[in-house]
Image (cartoon, rainbow, N blue to C red; front, side, top):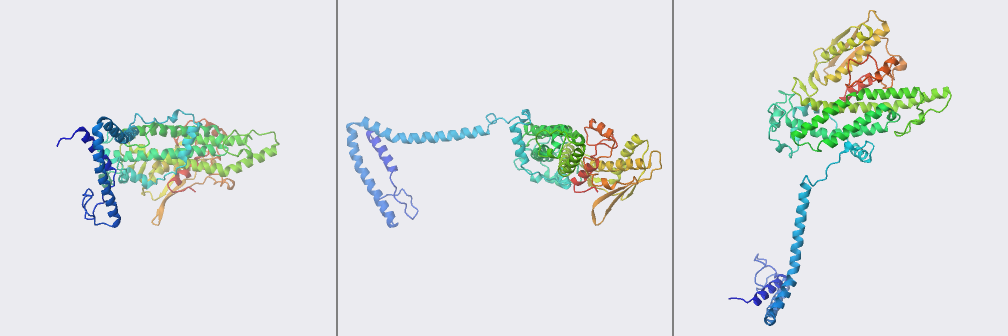
Length: 542
């Protein structure tokens, strides 16, 4: 049967009205809800009432259809136009809104994932260190806790025993072989664990990637903590050398954030990150001497009367100059300042130096893992450190320095467990032993006089089956330590060296932590720093 345009329009209009009607309830037998509305319903009374109402509406539509057909036959064009526009506009509007919403969300997702449309990162390195943006950034990172890393953790990480903890989104993307290793495959985490004992010092690309990712997160936090400490320490924060150290730490903090991605996920990013840390490691080499200069500058300010007890009121502002007072008041003021500094300043320096050792260990371990493997070493850690061999080297260095100063050096005798080995950082042990032996040789020579028959210095290396510690004891006959100085030997502000030597050390430019080129006695930080090295891995010096 062929339908006229008027009949087609009537049918379309009827279909739209049908869609707006409530459909008859679906029977409980599972038949389609489009079943004939005239079929008797076996559902409840409410369902029957709904079906009856729907059926009545269907009959009304059939009656209206005949009336509409007669009217459309008389004036078809105006009725068709009005009917189509009235019914189609809301549908077109809904389709347009839906399309716009989808397009908008698609565009938003595309722009968020597109690197070109993302906001560029702020180049914090170009901002002044005192700017609000930098201060806010430092505060944000300083609010986060630091993550500790034990000696065992460093060794296991270097051997690849924690590769299973790496993020799954990084591991699958590195099936290719690394460019900076001897053909080590990126997917060898299982073999790394199996061969950890056989090839303990070799670091695979994934190990380097894992360590670099940890350092990228951890180093800004540690640097931010030290920046805040350097800003808040009373009196010492005003010293020029300490302000230089703070600027140096801030520069390194901003360099890491500005030049490296937040998540290191490729080998190229890891190599670039290593270059940044190499510069930072070298840049911070002189911090030990710079902070010692700061302590010397503080001692000088106390002696000159430039600081009084009232100056210890915070971390900002210039220290007030000494007013015109009597000599007795001046001496009392100096004693009071020195007494007040014992608590706050020394606690800060202990905390600062131990933290600095931690930063140096983390960076040094990572950079060493990138070097060719060395037998028995995992980075900077030697799994079979021999105290006997370390003590022998320290004796040679201390004797060289003592002979250069006095023309002769006492003999040193080593006894005890000479065959013992244990995991440790050899450079730390060497520094500690060098400081102890330097002090013993100097005290022995000065107590007995030059060209005398010096009694030997004794070093005992001991351990026991019930003792988890390795104990190294140094004894000499250099006259002992006066009782009045017993509490001061651990002070960073105390030294028995000649004042002229101290002044020479202030101008001494040393870019390494310790060197045999430095004087036998200098700024007075040897013993307290040695104790910090011992305490970092859980030991002590007494």
